[in-house]
Length: 335
Image (tube, rainbow, N blue to C red; front, side, top):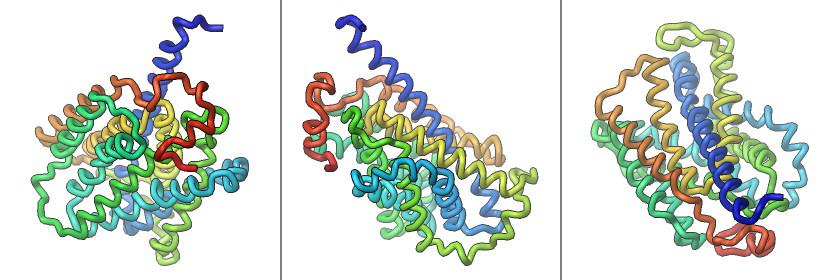
C-alpha cells in the first residue's frame, strides 16, 4: 500500500502526464485529417462524402466494440445519442455547412472558441471551479488561432455562416463535456470505447441522411490522388482518415478528457489547428506566413499554461468519499 503522504500527488501527476500525452496525440491525429482529405476532394469527392466515409468507416471498425458494450444501450442511451449527434455528426455537419458561406479561417477560429465555451459551461452550469491558468490559456490560444488562420484576410461573411460555425463550436463543447461523463464515477463509469463506438454509429446514421452517399463518385477511391504533386493511392488516404484521424483521434481524445478536465483538454485541442497548418505546409506545400508562425507559438504557450493548471473537478476531497450516486447527482451531470 502507498503511504498517506505520497498517494495524493504521485498518481495525480502520473495521470495528468498520461492525459496530456493522449491530448497531444489526439490533436495530431485530428490535425492530420485535412491533409489526407484535401487530395481526395481535389480528386473529385464531395467534402460531405469524405466526412461520411470517415465516420461510417470508423463506425465499421468500432462495431465489434459496440457489440461488446451493448449494455450501454440500456444504461446510458442519452449519452450515446448525445455523443453521436453532437460530438460526431453535429461538429462535422455544422462546420462544412459554414464553409459554404464563410472563409475557412474564420469558420475554424469560431469553431475553436469551444474551449472558452467549455470554461463557461464548467463554471456556470456544472458549478466547478475554473483555474486562472486555464482561463489565461484559452485567451492566448484563441488569440494565437486568429493569427494562424489569418482571420483578417477573409472578413466577408454572412450571419448564417457565423451561426453555423458557432453551432460547430457548441457541438464541440458537447464533445468535451460528454467525454467527461462518468470520469469520477469509478467502476460505474461508462466505458469510453463503447461510448465512442455507439457515437460513431449514431453519427454515421445521421450523416447518411445528410450526405446521401448513393450519389458519390465511388470510382475516385479506386484511383490515385495527388499530394503536392506526388500520386498517392486514394484508398490509402481514406484508411489514414478512418483509422488515425477518426478512430485513434476520438479514442485518445476521450481518454485525455477523463484524465485532465474538459477545460484543459479543450485548450490543448487548439493545437489541432496549428498541427493541421504545419502538416499542410510540409505535405501539401502550403507555405506559412510570419503571423501564422507567431500565432502557432502563442497557441503553444496558451496550451502549456492551461495544462500546467490543476484539473478542477469541483471537490478537493477524494473521489471515493462520495460514491457514484453522489457524483452523478451534481448539477449539470447527466443521469
